[in-house]
Amino acid sequence: MTDLAHPADPLDAVARLEALRAAIARRARDCGRAPEAVRLVAVSKTFSADEVWPTIAIGGQTVFGENRVQEAIPKWRDLRARAAELGTTIELHLIGPLQSNKAREAVEHFDVIETVDREKIASALAHEIQRLGKHPRLLVEVNTGAEPQKAGILPEEADAFLALCRDTYGLTIDGLMAIPPVGEQASPHFALLGVIAKRNGLNELSMGMSADWPLAVQLGATAVRVGSAIFGGRAPRQTPV
Ligand SMILES: *Cc1c(COP(=O)(O)O)cnc(C)c1O
Image (cartoon, rainbow, N blue to C red; front, side, top):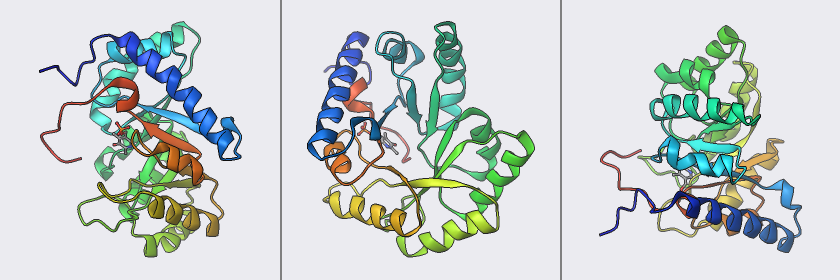
């Protein structure tokens, strides 16, 4: 059996990245959108710094997503330092569930936090942003499928939560993020996210992964989060994320 977590040749990741970028641009044009209106967040979770490095050094990728704060910190301390030697600045997105006791580290280490989803997190982030004087861009995660095990604010609570973030905690929210339920048609979920964003005057829509990014681009994604289509398969997790 091949080890899915470790693709044989990291240069493959660069080739897949370049092909993906071209495909995203093509898809955007086909949907009547500007190619530069869709950003690619390369999801590097579970892959080591050495596995990710060629996509930066050779592939020129600068925007990455990680879903665990503790995994990301040492890895990206290393990768940011290496990138800095090339004059490259990395933009790191937190795309996994955030616990309030990790809010400080999240604000310190991430440029974009995509998973603001409850008052406790909004409050903790506001506190740390104030304390550290660092302002990561923020997205609210919406649990469009109302799945009990999944993070994200429920769709019917999204408007009130966005108002709470703004009015009570002084947070600027740039947009919304969603992960549609596994095994369901993604399009109604992407469409719902777009509707909630529009009625709240939000421009950023982070939606679409390896399996469904073309649909997300069609339905207005401004960022797609793609991991396995670039880096290869990941070993199954022991614990749910
Ligand atoms: C892992 C992950 C992705 C990327 O998934 P792939 O199917 O590997 O492209 C995107 N978004 C989130 C929130 C993730 O956890």
